[in-house]
Every structure is written in structure tokens, then in C-alpha cells.
Length: 265
Image 1 (cartoon, rainbow, N blue to C red):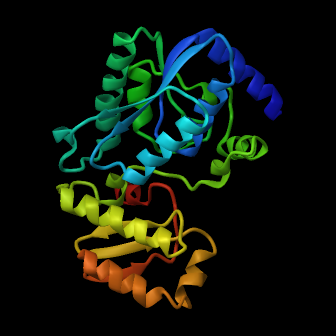
Image 2 (image 1 turned 90 degrees about the horizontal axis):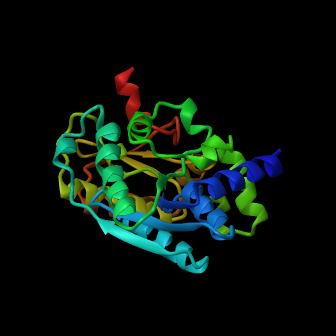
């Protein structure tokens, strides 16, 4: 089944011929960059957007991945869009429209016919308001069009020997902050530093959600049990408090995509 879907993906990319890949550095867009780099007679470049709410680690990993696979790669720096300063409920839609309009302009100015992204077939089953912006802007999603799921993409990456095959899901840092809350640079940097600390302490994929001085930590399966008896637990608590969090809590439900969306239901 995966082979048939990759054949469809090949056909789609050859049909597009000339395109810009919106390259976040996450699993899906990384696989798309890798796959496109192995197809002859197409022209593409991968473009990563740097904004204040994208972790710098993700930018660096995107640079390393593109370089490792000899893919042409550009970085566009964009300031914080003021229309999402208060983290409105339609933040993802507004953000996608702003960022992808920049990518569309880049594509046009550099002679590329299309803009594509790494949306997979599973994404369309979830609450993702940003997808509406992609439809309006006529952004193509080859992985979703080939009906490749997240698990299938992981398997393809693993079979290809790509180290990113088990990379945890990623999302911008604004998803760690409640809706209708004013966003400051300081809280973004706090969250980024907190998640970097969790990673260094052995908890990849951890989310640190910020609630008025409270750090609500969501962990991947198996990590909740680990942290309770972890000798590093006190060091983690002390580190988070030094960053500015007053209280440190563990979310017993663990990591789940879009947990901040619960307040919208």
C-alpha cells in the first residue's frame, strides 16, 4: 500500500514540476523535502519561516536536514503578526494566511509555479483551522493528496534510514498559551526554554503549557511514570521556577494534540 502511495506522490510532484516546499523541519515536511530531492527533472526549494514563536531548535534542525540531503533551502524572517497578538481563537487561520502569503510571494518572485506543504491525510481529520487558509490560498498538500498517514510517513522515513522517523509532533509555541491572552516575547522565551530543559532531562516531545504562572506539563506515554521517580525531578522543578514559573504541575492526561482547544468545546 505504501509503495502505491509513494508512486502517486512521485506522479504528483512530477506533475507540479516547479514548487516551493513550506519546510517547518517537522517529520512530514522533512520527508517531503527528502522525497522531492530524489526525483529528477523537477525544480524546488525548501523555505523555512523564522518567527518569534517558532523554536530555534526547529529552525536549526531544518537547516541541518536540508544540508544533509543537498536540498536548496532558504530562511525567511517574519516579525510577530500583530493580528494574533492576543492569541485569538482563529489564530491558526490568521497566522497561516500571513505566513503562507509570504511564501507565495517568494515563489512568484523566484519563478516557482506552486507552493506545497507537509499536511498529511490524518491532519484533515483533526481540528486544524489553518487548513482553511491553505485551501483559500490554493496551497497543494502532496502527502495528503497521496493519502499518506502520519504512521505511514514514519515508516517510510524509517525504511529510508532517516533519523527523524520517530521525531515527536511539533507545533508553534503559541499553542502552549490559552486563547485570548496577550502574547509577550518573555512568555514565548520562557516556554521555549522550559521545553528545551525537558528535552535535555530526557523528555522529548514534552509540552509546557503556560497558565498565569503555572507550568502544566504534558508528557508522552511512559514518561509520566518516569518523572515521578526521576532523580532529576527536583532539578526540573528548580529550573522551571528560575525561568519564572511559580507552580509546576503534571497533566495526568499526558500529551495530546491541541489540548488548548478544549476550552473552545
